[in-house]
Length: 482
Image (tube, rainbow, N blue to C red; front, side):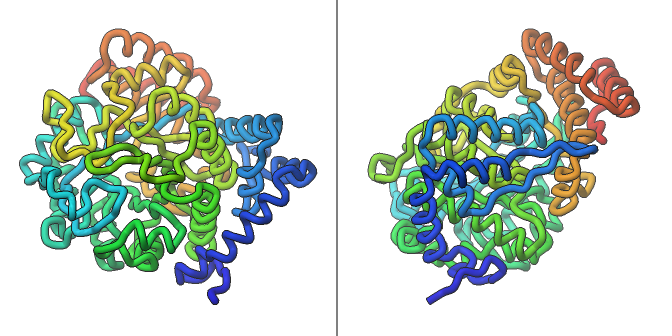
């Protein structure tokens, strides 16, 4: 029988079923233990220092107690602390991105995904490099600077060489004032050598969702194809880091398995990366299963309510305070608005989950991976964020300045990240407003920028940021960064 060991490189040991079950039993026994809950909450609170804030984070057992807790006033305290942590380390900045689907050819049999190989009535499509260029120009014309590329697993149609060619194409396109400055990659688990090639291609974050940490369920949900190998999939982030990629993104697809089990596994995976590599995940995503072609989410009996979803998000924020959190357009405007307060630091905007979807005047549905709940334009999402006091950020500076992995985390943990990210967010927002924003978005956005510039405490940084924003307003000069 496998023994729990967060430093092990074996999936069954760092994501240990026995440890998860003991954790859930411990959490259930203590979900009304007010003294213990208060102790955990006090540990989670951000502490003010001379340079900023620090947070202790929580173990998977401590975080699971908070997730199990259903005492109303304690739940409100969890939400309040989550908001405090979000503001302490990420401020009111929200990073913007869009997914770009390259190909929906896939050899796997995943029962929750319409790309599964048995689905014979979905249109199969793979973008040519010319079509990739057209998609990227359409995204640049919206104002996007950061993409997450997606492709099904198919060694014939989507080999690593195809992905690398697409990345080269994307980075090579300069259209008017547009440029994609960061390409994150969400493709199937692969080899150390292929991760090394992705790193050399200049990718940002490598993202791979576990889908479910419950091995028995995982094997049933992935009955055929390379993804059926639970261990190979679960150990992928270690291979990615061995290949030199120090920014990795985790996630589970909530609704496939019992959420408390998934939550414990997710935090344990973060702990494992920290224990082995000295740095946890750069991001954690929180997707929920949605309707799609050939997929009925009601067929999965572990769906979660909006309230539980909010509780999960807040508890993740307390457990891993320095990790970015992502919510996509799978969720509605109302759900996204609620979760922004509880720890979300990145959102997608104007997403299309079909292959070649951005060059179509009407949203195509024939090759969609899932239904999009928030179908607003990027400008509408940007304006909505501004109206709610958030700074839409198109910044990619940390990645291009080498502030990744442990270097990014040390900057975040020392409180110095605000001296980079805050002015960078304002300058990239100014770029968006000048080049792409409608009149009302410009009016609201520049008023927000003027207000936020006053909050920069370093006079030199404030002066340089203000000067650069004037350059952006009055010239074609772009891409200023700290």
